[in-house]
Structure formats: structure tokens, C-alpha cells
Image 1 (cartoon, rainbow, N blue to C red):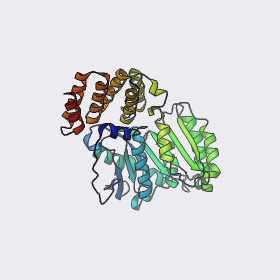
Image 2: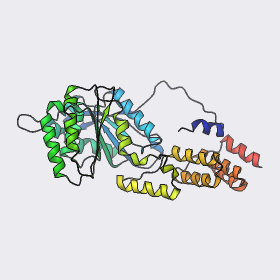
Image 3: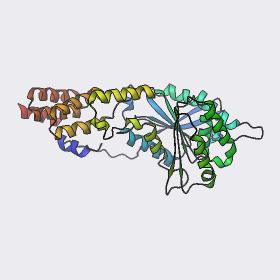
Image 4: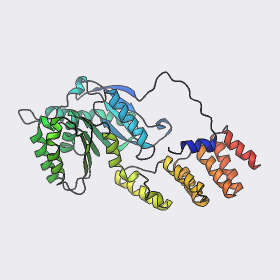
Length: 369
């Protein structure tokens, strides 16, 4: 939240940080896969506040989750973006080791993609039901793969399109079977004229030749896509194989309408509500503006002495994110600056209902008395 310093100044909150021996980015889970015939491990990273909420979340399914650095990068990406730009999400990192290492997605001599088809069945029949049983998820699912696993993600998109809502490919290795994927993509797009999916592909200018040699041909084929299909192929400059910013850029692309940019910040509250209600219909789950953004907007209005508008924005914020003593406290400060002492008292008391030992709210009430 960009106004963290301002918030701390207003509230004069003393923050105590307990020393921790370890920093956790997720939890390892294991289960037996009937399709793959053995034990599979995955990592799970939950949104902040998951345990205290009752909402259902979209999920990013990331292949090659056994790479801790890649999983940590993906987890931090979700945490950073969800503070202001995208909905909160669950991250599942699939460990592609042991029986789960078999997802090669080029055809064999018989023309069949046996490993890719089998790994799809594992996702559909084993992993997704496992996650649905154990976590609160909604129907919006993203599949994210890199390099060889990126090729599997593309295969999944072209052959089993209904399983996921959006697909992310970092440096897909077209070079292993380029003609297969060029032909299959052409045929797929011509047969799906009402394709309501999203695809994001990234690669580096210093990427492997197996990627660079075919990426422009693939991009040219995508240009023949139906209008309903949202896609982007992005070159990341001064970057090699599997750009680290891929998931970041993909999520900003998929959820571009969620960002409260300069123009959207000019909207009235009814217009903001209408905008996010439409987004919720489009994505199939409830999407609301992020708390930090609304708080910043309210503070701006307060500092500009637009007290009525600031109060309205604080009330909208509290209606979406109840349970914060700070929001009620700063609303009380705004009422006080406006000269409405009774409403200021009410707001400070609401703050104390949430956190009875909140010193600054007590002090504010004493000053009024």
C-alpha cells in the first residue's frame, strides 16, 4: 500500500515484529494419483487472510513447482499484485518429479501424444478434485508452464480447452515438434470461432533457438484468432529462457480491467460498482476493487478537504472490507476535520468494537470529550 507511511503517521501505531527462525512461502502436500500410479507432491501458497475468510478463490496451477525459486517468485508475484491490481488467488505448484515427470507433449511414431494425454487426465481426474476438496476455489483456473511444460500447457489448451480459463506459456519449446503445433493451432482456431479463453506467451530475446526460430510463425497464426479470444505474445528484452516476469505480465494482462488507473479513479462510487459488477460477470466470480487503492483514494479526498466525498469513499471501503479498526478510525478523523463530532465519536467507537485496546481511537475519544 503506497500510503503505508501516511497511515502509520495518522495512527501512530507501534508495530512489534516477532523474530522468526523460518520464512514460509507455502506448504508441501502429497497424495496418491490413480492416473499416474504413484505419489505426487505439490506446494500450496494461500492468500493472506485465507483462514479468516469464507470466499472462494481462483487458482494458478504452476508446473515445475519443485523449483523453489520459481515457486517463490510466483508466490511473491501473486501477493504483490493482489494488493492493488488483481484478485487474490491460490497458487498450486505441481512437483514434476517421479511419476509426475511424464508430460512430454510431442507425438510419437503413431501420431499420439500419450504422455500429454495421460497428464491431462491426471489434472482432470486427480489433482483438480484434490484441490477442490481441500481448498475454497472457484471455477476460474489458470495453467502456467515453462519451457517443456509450457509446450504441455499449449497442448492442453489446443486439445482440452474446457479445463482451464486462461493459459500462460513461458518460452514454449516449439523446436521439439514445430510443425505439429503450427498445424494444430491453425486447425484449432479455425474450428473454434467463439473461443472465450485467454492466452499469454512470453519469450526472451536471448532465448533458446528452439523457441526463437518458431515464435513469430506461431504469433502470425494467432493473428487469425476470433475476436472473442484474448491473446498476447510478449518479447522480454535482455532476457534468456523462461523470463521471470512472465506470470506478473500475464496476470496484469488477464485482469487489466481490475486496475484502478487514473481514469477509473475519476469515476463515482456507483460507476465503480457498475464497472466491477460487469467484471464479475465476465470472469464468473466476484471481483471488487482492492482495499489499498480505495483507502488511498479516500485519503487523497480527505487531504484535499473534500470531506463528503472522502466519507463516502471510506464507507464504501468499509462495506467491502469490514472488520478493520483503522478504516473506522480514519473515517472518524475525517468526520472530526469536517466538524461532525457526533459522527466522529460513532466511528471511533466502531473502531474500538473491533479492537478494544486500540490506543489511538481511545485517545481520539478522550480529546473530543
